[in-house]
Image 1 (cartoon, rainbow, N blue to C red):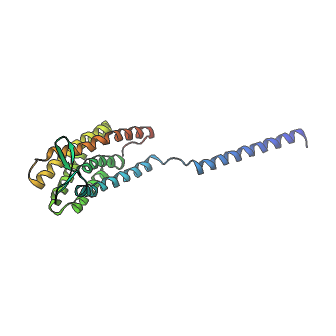
Image 2 (cartoon, rainbow, N blue to C red; image 1 turned 180 degrees about the horizontal axis):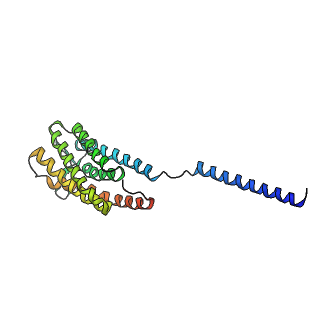
Image 3 (cartoon, helix red, strand yellow; image 1 turned 90 degrees about the vertical axis):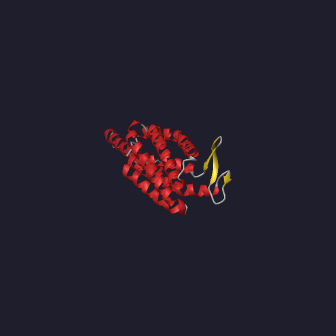
Amino acid sequence: MTGSGAHEKALRACGAFARAARLAKSATFSQDSPLPPAPDHRRRIEGFAFLAAFAACVPTANWLIGHVGTVCVPHGPCLIPVAPGLTAPSGVLMVGLALVLRDLVQRRLGVLWGAGAILIGAALSATFAAPSLVLASTAAFMISEFADMAVYTPLQRRGLVLAAAASSAVGLLADSVAFLWLAFGSLDFLAGQVVGKGWMVLLALPALKWLRDRDARLGLAPA
């Protein structure tokens, strides 16, 4: 074999080896290091997770009212302290959390899903509420959540944390007033209701800030 022929053969062998190496590297990456989900796919997954958590707040709130508290009134709610001299039914914690979660459902899935979540929650509220409180519970839920949506929707352009905090504040006040007035015709326990729900909104703010910053890093825009 001449020197030039051997040289050409060696070049072809090197080229074939390089192509095989690239293919092997590509196969290894696809098996061991899968690409992250596309933004739309991630948004939907997280949106339905938020929706499930939102729906779970309603039966959880009703369970807490009957089972968890520092004091449980016979044939009445279990109460927790929410501030010095103030108590509230333990279920108010889930009401405050539900307001924040509804905003996240809308952020991930859009305003129609946000409205649909309210209707789902209202149906659950009617199902799990005590018979004497079905009307008050369901009406208060819908009033508060739609008030939340009315505030959140225009404010979301100015940032998640601001929009969720402002809309939840309006929603928890609307829920407390509507429920107490419809159920008892009195606002005597308004302060405890508002403070209890407000604690959950405040506790959620650091998580909302983290979510906002992570969305910015991943390029996840609101739906």
